Length: 445
Image 1 (cartoon, rainbow, N blue to C red):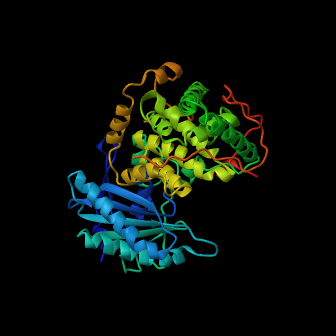
Image 2: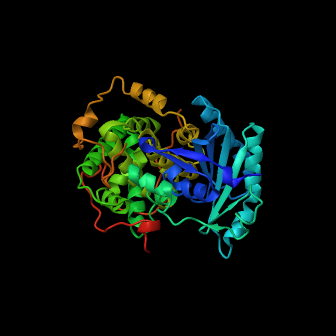
Image 3: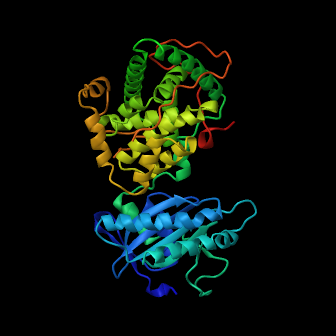
């Protein structure tokens, strides 16, 4: 049984600020600040260390839709958190779990809580099997929270307790004072990577059909494979330079729209199909640090949005690259979302499988970076920097500072229609004549 009056969990933040959380209400309010974003449809485990319950490592995963998947997922999350803490030298003394989900249809927040009660129980069992107790399990839904560990209806009534008003807690004030900003939600991250569903998607799919015919014809020529690979990487460099030199705009939506305008349909098609080659993709993955990383991430996001219609499976390559670069730059949350989406596009994509396991396991990306750096041996590593007019500090297009071999898949052949004819060489500038939008926050059609 949890005694809420004695629960004492200090939070170490920036500038060594110490914030103490004592109640489930404060724990529920703290979750977005602990993760850096507000989780959606997620199960979160946070490690506690020492007598005062200092927060440590944390893991998050989307709640599986099938209840039969809950026990193995709970075991995987518990093992991942405990082993990650042990690698850092401190086995957790306890765990706090959160279940975040919104009502579906006419469902109430209380019904969500009851629906997820079995998940709370298997989480406690999985952690207990590893000899790490779960001190609290909090369900957050419909602006309220419930605790599964306190039977006292006076402090934890059946109808739930309203969440604190955002920005009014001590932790919110400490976070603001430290200059920490809340990151995008998982839904917002996915919107930046989701293929278009607007009218422009038809033109993009036609460009992919045409590029498929052109690339297949070139690969069949003598030395054609090497020429296609070289042209793909050269085109990627030029577009990265184009994006890096574009004026900075405010907001993620506006930044993505600008990047969409800077990338022509035929250019996107040539890159998407060219990146299906493993060797080409691996060389592109080398743009994971330094001044090239930020524009590379913008390009991979933009290409992921262009894998429309019948080319959805082709998104595994740019999504994997986006996830890898985001993780390499320190954003494991976006990295995980992109890699999860890559495996949804192609569950057998080995590159994404390996990266996803490492990223979700909270491993250091530096060993992978070292392997990719070795791959540059014998090639001109100064070419990228010479061709890209990059800013002094890596910034994304919203003005924010950016701080294993899969099977080879041949380019898709056209579906039989007669799309617009593509040249053998991609064009050197954008040719989009309409402002493109995409699903979610950017698609109004």
